Each structure stands twice: as structure tokens, then as C-alpha cells.
Image (cartoon, rainbow, N blue to C red; front, top):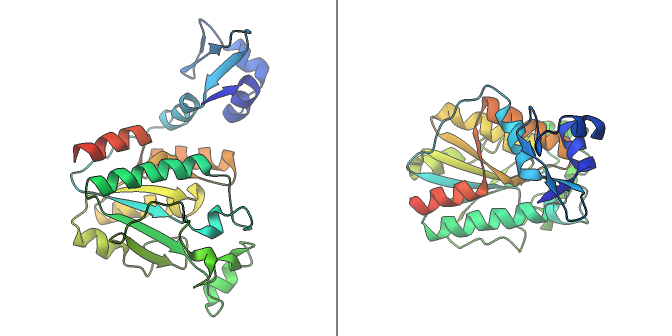
Length: 253
């Protein structure tokens, strides 16, 4: 996907004048981002290359991929995907990428786990959290908001777990499922990057399991928050891989 010079500058946090000044031999020096030109002479930049710049600018090493993966799909539920919901985001592309990962996982007998956030009003912690997260009542247990988006390619033997808080491990069967299936790698996708995705990525390693975040299959309501969290996740907690690389990995299992 290509973006304009104004969009690229906003994503990089610099001015368009600086972006032009850094250009030499059709490349943005110091960023490793190529410059493409339309037939009319307009500059264009690959969004994926800008993403990669953020991921590579830290000191991160790599966990690498294990031999027994599972896929965790976080909050692809109506409260997060329906435009009528106060918690929703614009995630059409991410949902398509998530479905591609799910479809590949099903073909390779890789366990698929769907997590559903929910809200109850008889819990002190949830009542306190509702003061911070407006609209959290859309996650009322047993409501339509907590149900899986009908576009998701789920199968009967997939797992479904329900989480009250931002950690999908907290008071759920997630770890039990991973241990039962002897999983050494957890592929994480879904919503949101700064919330449950980040939390699960940071917690997974403590169980000796490799956390892998699917670059184009996670999203946040704020693009800058999304990018900053992806960069921080890559530097500290998980490997962030493209969906293409993850699909190839699942194919090889």
C-alpha cells in the first residue's frame, strides 16, 4: 500500500520539507525507505517500509519460531468491529489478514484460540476500569457485543476463552490450552495493539513460549499509538513478523 508524502511525513513524525531534503537517489537517507514516483511525478512511499523502519530502529534480537505454534485471535468480536459500537476501530484490512492466518492454521491443524473480552458490573476492578474506558459496557457478558464477528472463519473445534481484563491469561484457560497442545510459539493477532496484544506479548515469554505478533493483523484506534507500541513490542517482548512470513511458517509445519 502506497502513501503520499504528507502521509509518510506524518507517520515518521517529520515535516514534508525534511522528508524531501533527506531524499537522495530515490531513497530517504537514514530511514531505509525508498521513494517511488507516479507517472505524474508525485512522490509515493510504501507503508510497509515505514512500518519496518519502526521495527528495526531498536536494539531487538529475535526469539525465532518454534516447532509447535498456536494462533491467538484477540477480540474480533462485535463490540470491537461493529461501527455502531463505541469501542470499534477501522480494521477491515486487519480482519482480512487475520482470516488469512486462521484459514492457514486450520489447514495445518494449528490450534486457533479466540479470546472474548467481557464486562460485568459486580466486580470492583471492572467498575473502576469503566471510569477509564468509556463504552466498556458494550462488552456486557452474554451480549451481542461479546459474540465473534460473523466474518471470522472459525470452526467448531476452535477454542473460545473469555477474559475480563486486558490480560488474556488472567483467570482464563489460555495457558492450559497451550500446555495441553505442547505449543512453544504463540502467534498473536487482533485488537488492540496497545492493550491486550501488548499485554499478551509481554506475558507469553514468562511461560517459555515464543510470542510472535502479526504485523498487519493487529490494530489500534490511534495509528501513532499503534506504531509506537509495535516498535516497543519488537524491542522488548516479541518478534513482529509480516503476515506473509507467518503464512509461510505455518505452511512449513
